Image: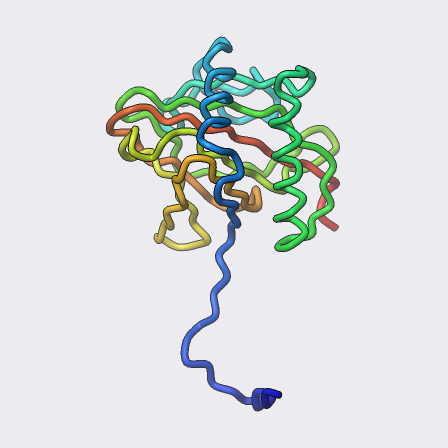
Length: 203
């Protein structure tokens, strides 16, 4: 039996919980390569910013420079990807945030392949119809040794950016209001799968 802490306890260090969650090996290396094959078979387009719907928004190369394609949820060949990600979203949301969530937007297959491809600091939170983006996630598809730079980093406030895991198959989720960025690519090619989970407005 442990003794309860005194009401005026002085902690020796700050207790800090990170603002994001991750699941290692959500997809195997072979499955990641399978997703890459699906993604690279699609017609890629320059990335746009400023809208929740595929094909909307505008190009801003200062803020974001990379290419992307959209993976259709109605395709029977990609249903297993959506299902695995749905299970992961429900798992981390139940453990950490308990947001009311309704659906995942179309998955964005992102490719960083030219030197200085990047996505500077931004947030994802925006209205999508009557719903709000509440959770964002990124699935690392590339072998981390196949590229340099291009790290997904989080900022909970201030000037400090924290690097997230870049292990192949890792699923990273975070609240859509959290500032994040992808640092400039210096070598190789990075592939990832990005998604946003929507639900009713916060009460």
